[in-house]
Image (cartoon, rainbow over all chains, first blue to last red; front, side, top):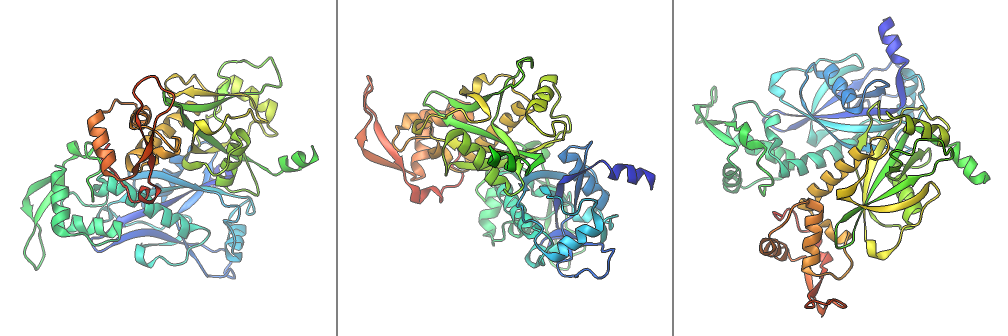
Length: 247
Length: 247
């Protein structure tokens, strides 16, 4: 389309954004990966999965570019999204297949690109992501089974997880990944999935209940075969008051 | 010089690094500002102070570029230096004097520049910074008296201070700003200067002593008119074990 063509001439060849999109499905922490489109079928298919990202446009700031990537991929707006690190190793494009793929999709395929990385937290139960214009397919991958990714995207993922772990210890951001109603056991599983360590149930409950961010609801879990557990919601008034609570 | 000329052709016109260099002189937290050189004396002298920074070179990664800026300005290596945020507002260069200055010093003065920002912690007592090749003079400015800076450098400074405050609450990084021997009162002043709040002396001492990161030395303060206070050092073995200690 002409509109797309005009836009593509206003792209900054040296700066991109990449997004590590985290979701939680009650079993584990997932990351959204995309399989890149290959115009040329002869390109080596190794390391064909990567994090969603794009070069920035001249009229948008970094946050806007990251929001655009997220919106194009998931259709969702107003998602928790935070910039955490920029990556600028001159050898970010070190493999032959990465270089060949860039030749097939970029106007200046050899330009050195510095990428500003964001991570997003989405409620997996709210939507199914659609494959976007720049992806062949999308896939939620458990963080314990991330394959070898293109470019330096494994490093970007690792840094994002470390940042998320630090932030979760400081602020109760877990509610961004949970549905409105959840059990204490689901909440503990979320913390364990992010921190990658088992937590003592009694200690965890004592500490999290002391923060006053949970509201017991007058409802119990539905559709389970075992004993139905009490449901809780987050008290948004108190969320901002909680700092570190020693988890 | 020919060497400089060759290097200048390998500069990335779209990506820079900027450094917020913090120091502590026992009275307050300071930031190193530079006064920019103006080849053309007719340029408006408003907002002539700024943070040190430079465009990156094609062969260096972001950390290396920040280390280079710091080394050129202070002569010091191995300083605590951390990347904290990237800034890419398309209108970062909004004033006439900023645009005019860029015309006088850059090969592509209208290129949009995204800057990757770092902050550094230096021991003020160890050295005196020398004006570097790109600065007319340097000045340690108390953080309560930062003037209006060029570009978006006031925003970069504010974000750096917020990041430093969060980090200090998580990790005992204060030792990067203090000499090897210090009094408890000096340590409290450092925390107050960074956090910008008065701290209750008894509470502060109780919490910081509980962390086991301080070693009482067999020495007292020298050259003071008041009662000579006990000197302390940091116990580097225990520093990495301390997480949040509720200051």
